[in-house]
Amino acid sequence: MRRAHLALLPILALAGCVAAPTASQRLSDSAYDFNTAMRFGRMDIAAEHVREIARDEFTKKHAGWGKSIRIVDIEMSGISMRKDGDADVVVAVSWQWAAETTMRSTDVTQRWTSTHGTWTMISEEEHGGDKGVISALDKPKGDETPQPPARPRYQTHVIYEQ
Image (cartoon, rainbow, N blue to C red; front, side):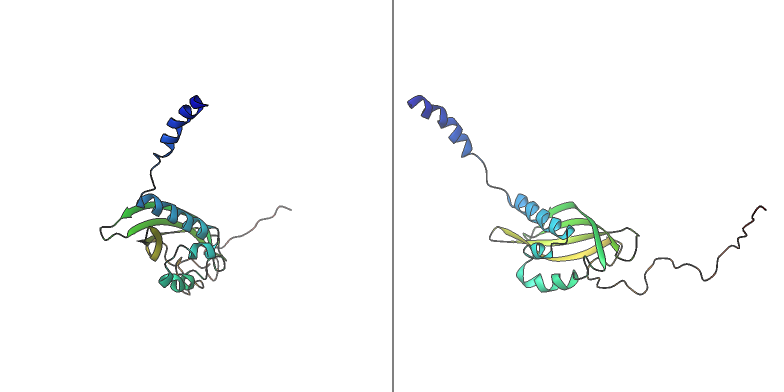
């Protein structure tokens, strides 16, 4: 019995050496959970990762997601810790207007802050690519998609064999 206890002692000692996650690891986990929920249209879960004072604005800005906008993919591009204690998370959002098949891509910077060790998103901003993924309720009137000409550009003739 004594030998069994002595054999377990090194295992228990190593188990106690597991370090607590760092602030950047907790941020990465929170940002991953948030963006995965956003990708699959789970705004209820995503909203849990948004700071309470920014939740109403977040809900309004993303009201079109899943309705007028189809999110194809969200990929985290980078995380940088700021000197003021906040952090920036850059994500690439691939999306489409629901009535179109044109794939669009927008780079979005999310600002995260830590309160008592819990990371929450406080703001987000488009900073590159196609505009309109954030706060798009309907397709803009002056969209850059080309419209077909009123009449054909080149005349065509069909010749049939008889």
